[in-house]
Image (cartoon, rainbow, N blue to C red):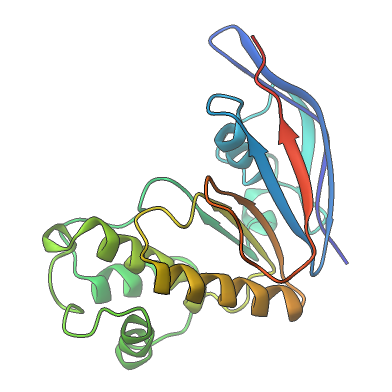
Length: 209
């Protein structure tokens, strides 16, 4: 099943053409690895693909829905993991994830959330304000969303390994592999080499002067 289609996508920033004529056809169980130098437009491309930015040209569809015209239906089975944590510094990990679940129609109670936080090494920190956690711990809270939204068919991950230790990187890679093998599709950028025993496609963005 085709999960995402991007046709003739282009992006301009500050009067500079970052990229143009980007075409992507992503199907179930496919992994797309987006590479390129800093400033080539990797994050800009991912933000366009998930509907957070508007392209200067082109069309993006997720599960047959135009992401820029019908964002609700297009993003129903989408999970985006970006540079920003996407969590409140004033709330606890449990409160953050409960709120996120309510916003995304995910049915998880406190106990289920605590089990996932424990898997991510956050036992004993469930009810401490996020602002008092380290950068790595805050990143783990954000990562918990991948464990929570089981209805997602597409993950778009922008530098997901940042601030993670070796063990958690391995756990995340295992989670990605499991997701792919059960029919999920992933688009990822990473400065770190992927250690995933799974076939991937590569889209390289050249820096445009």
